[in-house]
Amino acid sequence: MRIRAVAAVSCLLIASACTPNLPATSTSPQVAPSPTPTLTIVPTSTPVPDNQFPISYPIADSLTAGDAGDIVARLHEVSGGLPVLKVDLTTKQATLTALQPDKGVASYRWENGEITKVDSDIQYLDQKTFDPSQYPIDSLGRMFDIADLRGVRGELVLQIVEYREGQVVMTVTSRPESKTVFFNKDGTAVASLGLTSVADLTAGVGEVVGDATEVYSVTLSPTLGYSADLPDADKGVVLNRTRPAEMPVFETRRTENPSVAPFNPALIQPAGLAKAISKFQKTPDEACTVTVDMSLKRSAPVAKVDCGGSVHYADMDGRDMTDLVG
Image (cartoon, rainbow, N blue to C red; front, side, top):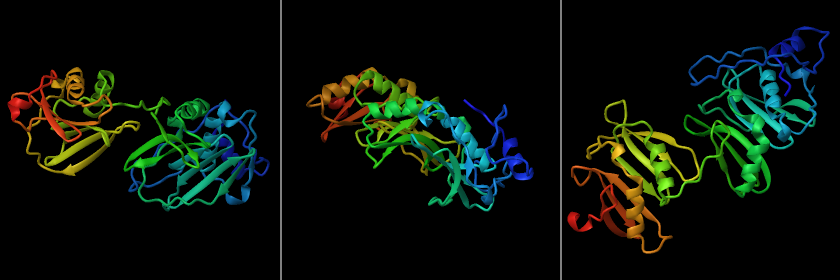
């Protein structure tokens, strides 16, 4: 991969003998992202003036063959190293949108061997910014292949952008949109989790609980996926972590003083939950909602299992406690 430095852009701006082809050197810029909109935005170099576009920048291979990271790095340099709001990549086009010091936006696009400055329909509404060099953009071809295997149809588009408040995610979708596949920051696809197998229950509960030693509740839902309510560092605030079936974990907070006591999530036994769900399902395909908490005020948490409106209770080993609770 070709890696070129900010010095090339500086040369372009100040030396009449330089050409706009941005010749190569051996290093790439280190960009410090602006995590909050209250910080002063300082470019790491000077953005290329409008009158210097278009900039010739041909590549030997396609974006999916390994040049995507180089192209995005070049777009970032052209922007002056500003914090980035969004990156879009197709097999033939790359677009980077950066946040300017005046809180306006500027978009730069590579296509057909040229870099141009383009109009953007993005507005800055306190979105989180990021450094694109922290994402495995060179794996574009592999991520497109995975998305294709998962049923994404149409013109594939990789996007890096804030998906929920404060959470930047990497996805592959299509134009027109057919389906979206989410990717972790290391380029691996987010696993699709079911709600019945021991393996999926172990992974899902583990993702929402994390390293917490206390939780108020853990819920499995056909609509929401996995969810956990946990004590927050701030008193009177509940931290919720949710892991939808095919999306990464996201966090929200709400003001609340829970009426149930917290418990140690290590007490949850995925094998016991799987046993209880299987026992209470009328058919193997019936969807069940499970809530594990201390609402029954027993010595250990109890799972409430609702399958099609029929409610049962089980302990953490999966034993039926419905008659005892009733």
